[in-house]
Amino acid sequence: MKKLYWILLLILLFDACKQEPKKVLKKKESKEAWDKTIQGSFSEQVALKLDSSNLDSFFVHYPQLANYAVQVKDFYRERNFAYAWYDKSQIIEQAGNLTNRVLNLENDGVYRKTPYQQILDSLLHGQQTQSKSPGTDLNLEMMLTAQYFAFANMVYNGVDASVSKASGWMVPRKKTDYKAYLDSLLNPLATGPVKEPVYRQYELLKKFLEKYRTIEKSGQWKEVLTTRLKIGDSSAAVKLLKKRLFLLDDYHGDTTKLGYDDDLKVAVKSFQNRHGLGITGKFDASTMSALNVPIEKRIVQLLINMERSRWVPVSISGRYLAVNIPEFKLHVYNSDSLLWSCNVVVGQTTHPTTIFSGEVKYVVFSPYWNIPPSIVKNEVLPGIKRNSSYLRTHRMEITGKEGGLPVVRQLPGESNSLGLVKFLFPNSYSIYLHDTPSRSLFGESSRAFSHGCIRVGEPAKLASFLLRDSVKWNAQSISKAMHAGKEHTVTLKDKVPVFIAYFTAFVNGQGEVNFRKDIYNLDDRLAESLISDSPVLTRNKTGKSL
Image 1 (cartoon, rainbow, N blue to C red):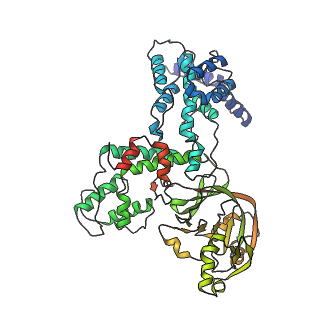
Image 2: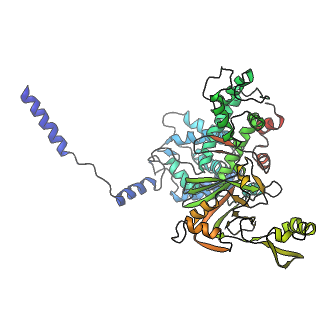
Image 3: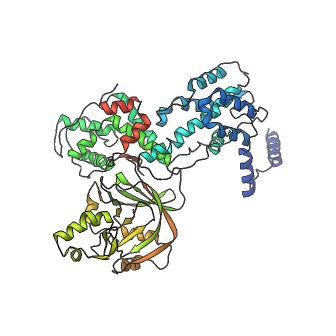
């Protein structure tokens, strides 16, 4: 028996020695192996093919999809006209996945429909219910591809650029190669989920859209709180408040207790923080107002900001700045990593800050303020008439005359309206970032006070960030230049992109959904274009569920 044991062991060792070791791919070989997985076909077969005449006939028969004819033809031409949705004679799983999403576009926050949805559903259903070897359906093959491009346009690109421009959005719209995305979507050798070609906020907001729709359907958003509450209060209203905050994931304690305790105070602070309110822990009027916003309106906010997320670049490499106007925040990024944020003051509703993008090119220390003609006309000249020493008091000087008005500038210094430094990104809107002597305004929860330019809460830190690649500039030299009382302009070696955006709903780094007031009344205007015929908007207007 012992002898047999050793014989078997030797046989196993011998077989193991005969096996070839696993080959470790070098970098070049690994790239070549990857290239082979994405060449030509999205399924393992290459024999099934169509030709351009099939496509021409298809778009004649389905004219409402003709807008995507060029994309569809380019797609098939690049893969030598091989079928994309079949593996030999079997329809691939992705066909059902795409059809499901096309038929349920509202789950992606879209209240429009692609053409011929029912025909797509019927064609796929007929294919799936046939025998084990049903053969191929050329019409279904082309319909799936055309529907994909229609779907991609709606879900990943959004409404026409004319609509976003009409809603005040002047940031250039993103450009996405949807053919490349379809490649990775259908590639059977791809591992893991395929990242969709849309800004990350889209997917984050989509999850909360599902959550808020679930809350709406549950009927748990019926009660309206109308009583101010504070620590120590004990009433049915406190219990109701706990239930509402539990529903929103702000409160995690016992919802049956009637007392306004420390746990509830923490929950109220969480809610206030997510809604840009003063973080006091008290259930005051502003908190009450935010909590009583109808669930339908919150759903609309999510839909609107999912749409805005479709317009911006999927990802940005390198350093850039982003200002979210309703949030009153400047965010500083390196690629997709948030480095730091600070408070900003934006334009009043009568002088709104424009939504656009540019590139910071100059840092100007101890700047003059060249006062705009409108302010000279409406504020400076009336001030001079009231007080002959107005210019001296405000440290201003007249340097000339233009268009029938004096050209006025304010001298550098602590009292200069631009503060001690400004950041210029040349644009036709005359908007820039700058410091301010009015520091108390940064403590306000709502900060729309300027004439359109953006006041920065931490200007020295921003200057340090923009100049960090220069050995000449450090905290000490920056502080000295800011207080020199003499204007000095520094040209950045590498310009830094800046995006002035408008999001009234977004998800923060902690995964919490945030809502902000629509200070420029842009949400409803966009909602009319997106979902004017949907029950969601109708409920939002009437306040009643249909």
